[in-house]
Length: 351
Ligand code: DAH
Image (cartoon, rainbow, N blue to C red):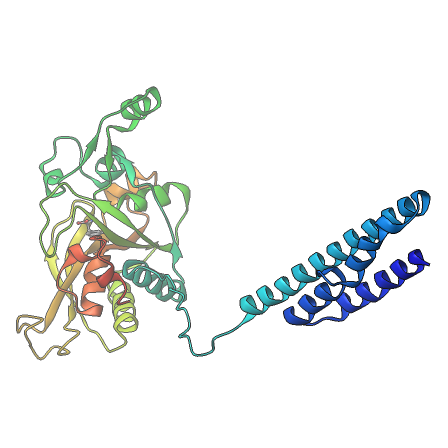
């Protein structure tokens, strides 16, 4: 009889617990069965009136049932808690401003370098590369500047001390190691491995041991151009130059060559372009001359061909070397070269 009652209490308690949907209902269910005047509590109280054997078995059943109800209450509470928690988590406040993801972007030097590469590849040029730590041979000797030649003084050089056997061996074979002072050594490296005709550019980092100011840095970028064949001439050079600068500045640019001297070219030129601001009329940017100086160039000296392993007077071609920062400064109207490598994000983020 009593056992029957206990089992009924159990079924109805469990199903009620399962059906509850809020705290106060659950509290009421708990009270109804386990409270002071609860149904199961009443039964537990009656146990003492029973005879030995019956008291024992009904007692066990009643206590097990009590525990099961307590467990069911607990897990229901936990379930309701979780529900609340999920709700909190998934709540979306559509009025909160979005989080901005900061995108990185290319450095202005890289942007300009890529533009230059695009223009030259469209003109059929290949992109060549060489090491930043160079040997004396490639940086000077092969470019027609033998040891102790005063022409070397034009490049304030960072010389490197050999620190291991391998470097010492290179040192003995190709002269001391240094940080390349220009991209011209790439001319020789490329010519040693390739046969004319070819046209290349070689953009890259260069280093000079000199005091910095608004137009000079110890670390900077140049790009070299080299076009060699049987009959490449100054006319080809002027045309390529005009094409390149007109495309780079997206306006018609004229070229002016002035006689100059570089050991690795003969004849050599300083190379001006018509002012990108006034178009040649004369303005503050070009100091009223109508022209802007951009770099050095010339017809490759035959001694450079010979140093690269070619016979003398068989090939001819032009070469030039420009400062990449200078072009970037002209394009973006920047008046301080040190901004490029200064690490100031306020500058970099403008590109
Ligand atoms: N290498 C020279 C420099 O850094 C620039 C230069 C001048 C490169 C004339 C050339 C050239 O290829 O023909 O000052």
